[in-house]
Image (cartoon, rainbow, N blue to C red; front, top):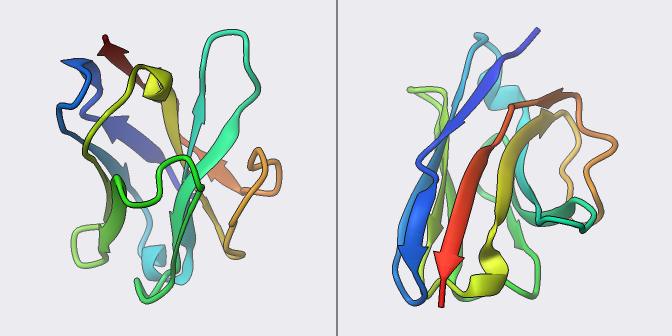
Length: 124
C-alpha cells in the first residue's frame, strides 16, 4: 500500500513559477514510477509528466514541455513538479500517482495509487 499527498498548489499570476510536491509513504517508493496528472474544470484528466523509479527517465506532455520539470528524491520519498512560465490553461487540480509501469500519456487509468490532488489556479 502506498499513500500519496500533494502540496504546493495555489493562486499565481501567469508567468509565475510554482513547485508542487508529492510525499509518498512506503519503503519501496524507488520501485515505482510517478506521474503528475491534471484535471481542469469540465475537462478530462490528462497526463502532465512522469519519472521512472530510478529518476533517469522523464516524460512530458507537449503542452508543458520546456516549462515544467519533474524530479524525485527517493531518500525522502518525494516527487516534485517545478512549473515555470505558467499559463491560465495550466489551471487544474494536479494529482500525483504511482505505478510500477511508467505513464507517458493518457488519463492515468492504469496507475495503482493516487493522491487527492492540489489545486493550481493561474490568473491572466
